[in-house]
Structures are given as structure tokens and as C-alpha cells.
Amino acid sequence: MSGRRKSRFPVAYIRVIDMFNKLRGHGITNPSDEAQRRSSYAERMLEELGKEIWSAKVMGKGFRSMVLNPVMQRHRFGVPADYTRIVTRVVSGLREPNIQDATVFYLGHDPVDPVIINSYRRNILYIPEAQWHLCVVLQVFALSNPQTFHDVHTNTDSILLDRYNNPPGLAKRDPYGVPAYTATEANVIPHEGLDEFFRDELDIDVG
Image (cartoon, rainbow, N blue to C red):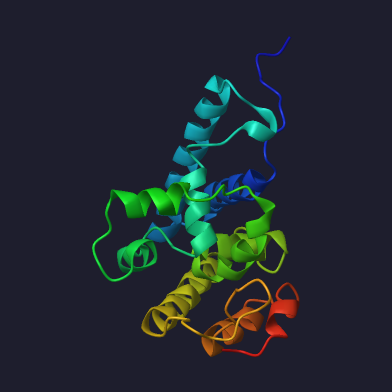
């Protein structure tokens, strides 16, 4: 009998696992510092996840990953890990974050709950590696293309700068309370070939 453990676990984790796997693969052909950094990080995360799964006492739908959950919480709120100012603003507003703020941010909601799928969709534009992964999965970009990898990071920087300087506040929102896309976001979406994926969202007036 094989020593591997086979068990189902929350499907919401599959997207992040595949993202890490593709980032690791992209690093094979792209020698840029950013690609290599992302690739190394993805490999470490997959290794830690493997250890976690191997030693987990609870699998199946009840499994919750200490490795993946923090990543998914940042994706839920559209907080890229490399942008400290944005992390601070989302976690605690304009003041210095405390333990309670961090606890609410990372543990306040189950990240595999289907009810927050719309938040993941909306905020994927703020996470460069998640946005790039979506383009690769939809076969808009080739996995090995270094230019499109660079372009996504450049476009995300523009989106984040615009959002940081112009918080959504009372902007027009959809029935789920998700704010409409900004003009910058609405311009980036078709540029990256994602207009069909976000067609329903784009039908809402741009904020």
C-alpha cells in the first residue's frame, strides 16, 4: 500500500494550491528577481502544506489549513502581502494595528465559506499573483511568458495606487455590498483579457 494519504478537503483551497504550483513552474523559465522570489515562496508554501496535510488529525471538509488560511484571508480582502501600508489600512484603518485587529482580520471568518466567493472575485485584481494565475488558467497568458507576468504586476501597482488614494467609501455597490470597479480597474480588465470573466461585474456602473 502506498504511504500517501488520500482525502478530500475544502475545494476552496484548490485555487491557491494551483496558484502556488503555477508560480513555481513559471520560475523555471523566468529569471527575473520577482519571478524567482515568487517561485521560491510558492515552493516553501507547498512544502509546508504537504507537512501539514501529512500530520493533520482532521481531514475532509473539516480540515482547515494554518498554511493557506492567512493567504486566503488576504485574498478575500484584496491585501497583497508586499504592500505594508495597504495591509495596515485594511486591518486597522489609519492607526497602528493591535492583536485584536489582527485576530479579527485573520480569524474573523472562515475563508472557505462559499458566501465570500464574491469578495474573492472582486478583490483578485489587487493580488498580482492571483490575477496572473487567473489569466493563465483561462489561457489568456502562457505560463512561461515573462512579459505578461511583469505586465500584471505593473497593472496591479496602478490599481493599488488608485485604490489607496481613493478608498471606495460610499461608492456604488452591487447587491452583495461589493463596490463597483474604478475606471483604472475597468481599463485593466480588458487589457488582460478578463472582460468576459468579469462581464457581470462590469455591467454595474463604474464607480
